[in-house]
Image 1 (cartoon, rainbow, N blue to C red):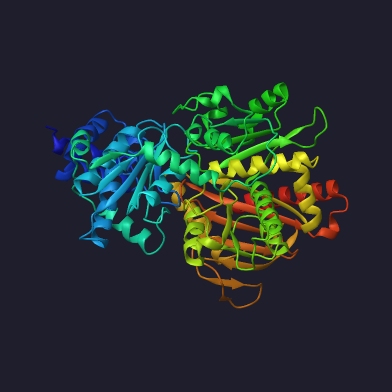
Image 2: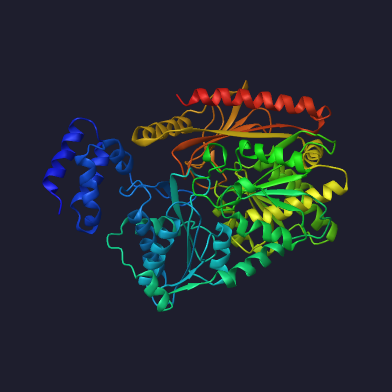
Length: 600
């Protein structure tokens, strides 16, 4: 038993001494006094007695939110702003309650998977126990599996929802829960808001012991059935062509080894080396620079590039820890000893768009009704390529691959060709409703092999696309704003940018401000008019030079504001491509300097 009065007195003293924020104190008081949180009260009281006020403030100052990629945060045994048994349990219970409300008389199913992070298996079992207690049959992928395989399992086993425990590319200190609807995609309106409301209103969490649930058939291991079906679905997107390519692949200590090597082998790539230092699943990402397994960071490729130079490899592929995103590096030319460079998500997306559309055009399987999808902050080069091949582009989508998956279902998946987002997420096929690093790896390897047969590299093909469609450069940076004060600063920044657009950026006048929160577009000196677009907390500033613009939005998964920069020169300006690239790079640098000054 704890001495609640003493703990509450210590709490009030800490607030009076400004060692705890008022919001943290409010949540701590709840965890000390509410019967449904009684199992955590001793730990909370112990923290107060030991004066661990910073830890308490971090863990309690807010309720951990749901963002574009689920509910993710730092692992800590207590706190509503941390990942622990309580916050994971609330998420699963709320999901179960919401799905049951939608289908009160149905025999319900849920797919569950997990990655190698700290406590992932425990949390997966916890979620399974909750879903089983709620009357669901749980199809459990035993062993580390990718996020796209979870999306596939939801569809393949005709589930009503899905859960995967993964924090993607976050630091080793973090974990997360992602929830999926019956389409295999993450929830979109109205289900996102309604399911979150149910999660936030949970008090009692009901569990059926995992082993008991297995004995009663409420939890069923399904990996032996789902694994080969998933591999077959991915390989069905493969296109015939050359396979003479030496590849190095890294799962970055994540789950990718269960997906990428098998599909590459299945489609005929038999010279694939799994990079040894990154091969073993490891929750601490031990051999990755700074222990951040993110293929967006060029540093993660440094050691692999050295290995490629030693072995004569011609392409490097890397997936993030849950294998839903793909990064790559390739030699700049076919010359011996050529420099290697990484490819950005925008560049990979553009190359894969060109690859799929060119092959399907040559096969005669492309129609004007076919379409590609991209988000608002993904390169417009994809649209130019799609226009060239006479297909549609669905590009008026908010950030987050769930919007691409939703767009597929609204437009018709049978006409979907490809989806891409700048953050290294790609999809071909309709086997999932999320990005898939395995299918992207297959397609990029195929294109690299085709280009090799023609004497080109991926970088040289990208140059050809620039000459044809114009020069494109994209970049981004983030400003982290942690804690309660950071959240207030983030809100203030976004409010200021929505209300008062800058007059110029990088020496270019702002010719229009697209405000996706208010649904208006405003030109200098003019009145706001309706904006054709989705609703979300983002603003885009179009600059006077066509194709040059910047976007600003708060992250949906991390405490930061993201700034996106886009520069463009028309095809006639690419005669001297090296000079064009330098001009674009200089412009991006000027954009970033001006945007950094805006943060105040």
